[in-house]
Length: 223
Image 1 (tube, helix red, strand yellow):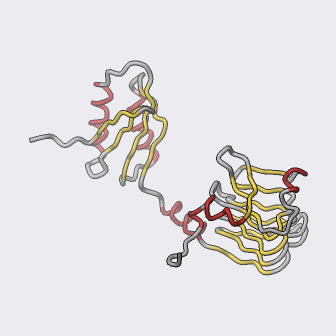
Image 2: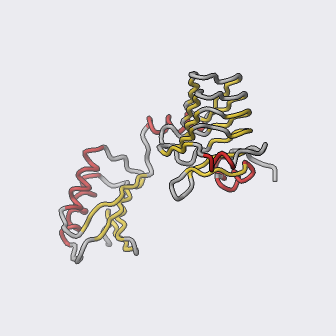
Image 3: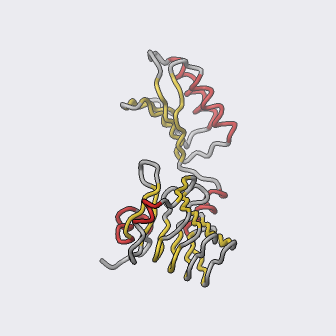
């Protein structure tokens, strides 16, 4: 009878992937991990991605897993991936998928915040500030400061009927609207700002948003 393996190792061009069984007892899994690390005959240094599957590991267990792997001078953990999230993380994601609507002018010195997406039906005046954990949509002129993805969501966007903001912030990236960027906003066309793969904030026509961020749409049906 073949003994069930609690730790499987797969080699890739980027290093090793360690998949830890999520149905066995934690003690059985960590014992097998120790054995396999001790038997390791690698040379040089290999990056290791650890997949814990549907097993929830608290901080002490994650630290024990990392320390066990690091007992080998040839292995270094680069990433631990889990299919499980905490209740707090789940609630945060739910909030970020919700939207709130503000109707009116956001005046100078005023701050409007949302835990998810924010829709403003009106203008955001200079020195007015709108902040959202999700995306920001302005049905009017955006002349002030907009901060989307305030909790770190790099997929969030900022869209406005007329984009004349002094500062655009997405996650932790900020763009001061220079003359060069302002040129892009000198025509009456709805525009959006998003985080480019190169790490900078880019501006494009709103029509491109469905291609740039297809995950924004939750509508079902239609063509």
